View 1 (cartoon, rainbow, N blue to C red):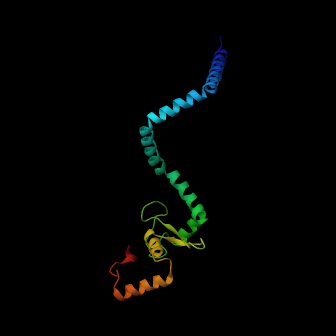
View 2: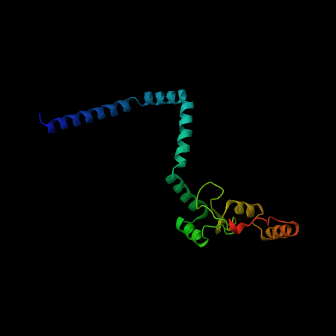
Length: 166
């Protein structure tokens, strides 16, 4: 028997086995489904723990974080990564308000946030989280911000912090 003949016989056996297994699965769909339900029920805690661990590892992957970031830019702000990068470059990677250096992405406090007008959806610039939350807490209202400025000038402020040296 030649090697070619042996290979052909093995391939034929594999094909027959594959066809037989396919037929068995078709004939036993209900039985398989019930078995899987019971197995999942009996192993619910282990499955849950595994899924939790997997999700933590999955979400930590750089490629997943990057794709999530890109989808968020498009979904929330209707901008592309190249528009974000242009804004980043024009601001030299610093917050448009406090001028502190930022990270381009991430979940840390130093990560850039896309500031936008909530009524029009128009993107205004990139801010650090603190400044973005600050103007949001002051209702994005220039009069309220001016009033806060006047209040701080009258009653004291953190002028002892040298923000430019950071």
